Length: 337
Figure 1 (tube, one colour):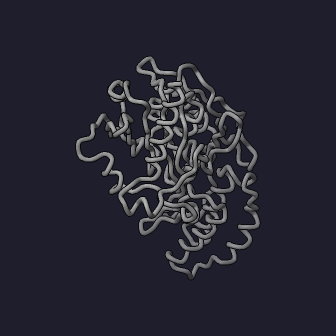
Figure 2 (tube, one colour; figure 1 turned 135 degrees about the vertical axis):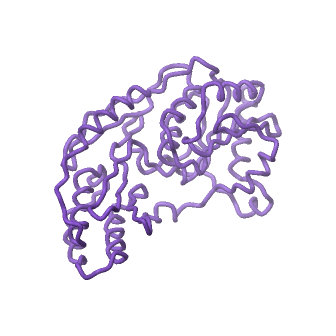
Figure 3 (cartoon, helix red, strand yellow; figure 1 turned 90 degrees about the horizontal axis):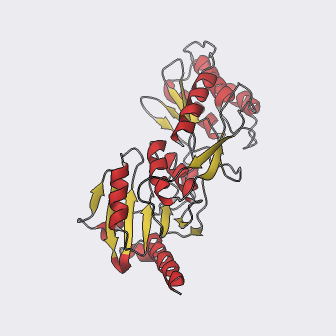
């Protein structure tokens, strides 16, 4: 799959580097620049039914050369919030504008202190993976960031050590993404054949509907250890970017079940640009769909939806891990008949 991403990235890079109009570093100039960057490069206006021209008309009236930078930043942040997208960020030296409602309607569903009750202090470390054999003969792996390196040797060693387990819990909660290559590498150990897991498109012009044809995305099985037993992937709303891609791929793995909460979305290649005053804007600019052509940008629902309960948390229990253990045990018992 890495070669597909390289090809798409090259095409995306060269076709999305449109020459931007020159704007003055004035309050009005920075507003115009931001509005135009979004207008020409953001991918989800039509999907989200956002009239960006109407947004321009409303917010342009609020821009004055007499306003200070804090006021300008606030107005621009409010304008970006009109697209209701948690992956759109305006970054200045003093602040980051973000759409908090993307997370506010969801529970945290992860507590690192409670996780220590399962990992303890004697867990193994293999690259970016933390792992431990839990009670009831279940393996537990935590991968907190796809920016943390993992090699084939790391993954093979961990899976070998869990070969006699009834199943594995693969926890990617609070994983904010990182390198797609790490996502692909880990997923490849849970597939036995080349499998279609989605499609990607990229912008080809400035129009809201100017997209390439969909490119197929496949997971190809590793030449290393292929895990054949039950694997349960744990998710929450703070799984996005490469973690979102990983969760989507694992939906098509033959023995996988997704447990927890809806992911945070944000798949695909990011786009970034700079305003005349040096502030930067960043957002997803290459829509990714699953194998059924459903959008993934806004999150993936789990197979089993469950939240951590206050009652369990008060006892130091992770409700989602316990549900994963129950799911593996149920699968193991069914196979024994």
